[in-house]
Image 1 (cartoon, helix red, strand yellow):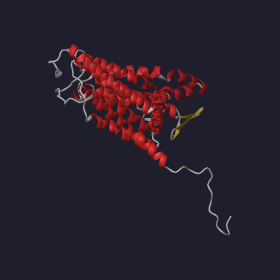
Image 2 (tube, one colour):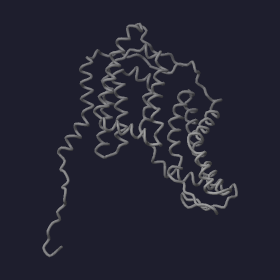
Image 3 (cartoon, helix red, strand yellow):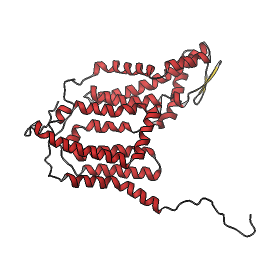
Length: 345
């Protein structure tokens, strides 16, 4: 493991006031983002809290905090610095928010919030610390609720897996799209049964495990592919088992079986199976360092007040543009008047 490039010329006690100054500025920038884009922040948290598909997003900030905590011994020795190019990433997030606001696409606005938060960290702590926090910054992407687009193809795939297993088990069945018919029942692989909820959470989980437990990129990719494949196959087996129980007993019994089998208990077993299969291939030493900071760059002294003023200005670009555009837009009339043409009614 490559050793960290630490600022050994300065004692840790001398760095503490500097860290407090930069972290205070970062906290102020975070508060500014929350206040300026309060509507989108509330909408994002509401989705986390109310949508069963994205309940796992509630744990992402905690996991990011844990990832940062892992790096604390090394971070304490690094020198935070203001970095003007970091404001470019904040501006990019601002532009993305403006596009999402103009198009009415919440996904773009929510992604923009994460980008602006990442940019604030990069700009206010500097490139050396940003490299040390590269994975936690990347992992923040999973706070954005995305992935529901896979529901329709997963419905079809789950139905095909269940149908194939029914054929192998000798159960007479007929499939039409996502509908499966057996002699004593008619089943639909609904959106809730597609397995998309667990697949989206499994991707976030597999990326985290790949980073924590593996050093080899090949093993990380193989684990991610294997975990995704296992979750899809397990959902197909669950659908098959529900239909098979209905064939052997009754539809009511199958519904009760599905309610017991389906959920985080069943897929918790799938996650445990994925970890057990990958355990022999873990190649990261638990005592190894969690971060690589790279060479320490000396940056020119920048006045914090001017820098924070510039960041605030960048954060306000998109909202102000949106407000001006809305003010200049013509409002729709309350009642539409059709043209009067002689001889026509």
